Image 1 (cartoon, rainbow, N blue to C red):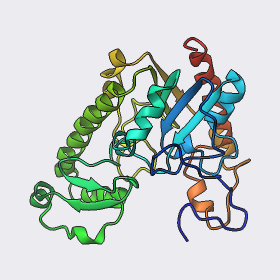
Image 2: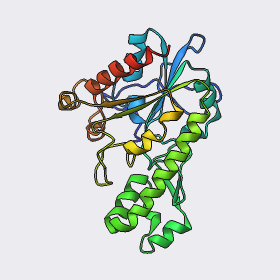
Image 3: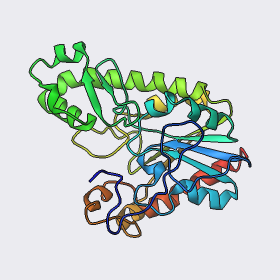
Amino acid sequence: MSFDALGPGALDYLPCRYGTSKLLFRGPRRSLKDPYVAFLGGTDTYGKFIANPFPDLTEQELKMTCLNLGCVNAGIDVFVTDPHVGELTSDAEVTVIQLMGAHNMSNRFYSVHPRRNDRFLKPSSLLQAIYREVDFAEFNFNKHLLLRLYTLSPGRFETVVEELKQAWLARMRTMIKSIKGKVVLLWFADHTPDEQMTPDDERDPWFVTRDMIEELREMVDDIVEVVASEEAQAVGTEGMIFSDLEAPVAGHVLGLAAHQEAAEQVSRVLKQYI
């Protein structure tokens, strides 16, 4: 059963497409005739297990269409390589970009699936030279790969992390430059960008630091930092919708209370620009 498959008790995300894009987005499909705010991001923007994720809650607060272009497990690549996404964001009043991890995108060390960015495709000759003892054929997902590399040699792994950070910055600059309208960056997590995460920690976004975010500040109109409060985290999966099979995964994503906090802060900022 795939991650997005429906089972007893699962949430129907009403997947839809816009224009010629090959990507499936969270539904129901929104009309593009009226002014709208576009939201780009990963699993939390998509709202996995959440009936009304923060883009929907923001729409209710602003009384303006909010286009949810989040993709489950997305990295920057999925948006940069899809030309129609660029058209959608350029027509938006504001584009909110949830900051995604640096691990789910192609770089000098490995390549990922163009649409399912969490899927590892193949290593580069450079990575194979650094980790000669590794059989890369056993990996299907980036996180599994990176956890193994980190476990084998934290020292060598620093070289990989530095490459991921530089690739992330370059790709973010490319994405921001492609958007004609206003751009707001969103940090949405259960920790601040000052806390350094390692691959043995499940918390996203991997390898993105405050210094990296600040390097982008002059390119964007605003940056919103939403760190789920202790109270929101304590709520856990209460109010979320998932099947028994999905329960382990649901415990690792931000819950309903965190989405409510995000919508409140994002709405407050967006009112300055619309």
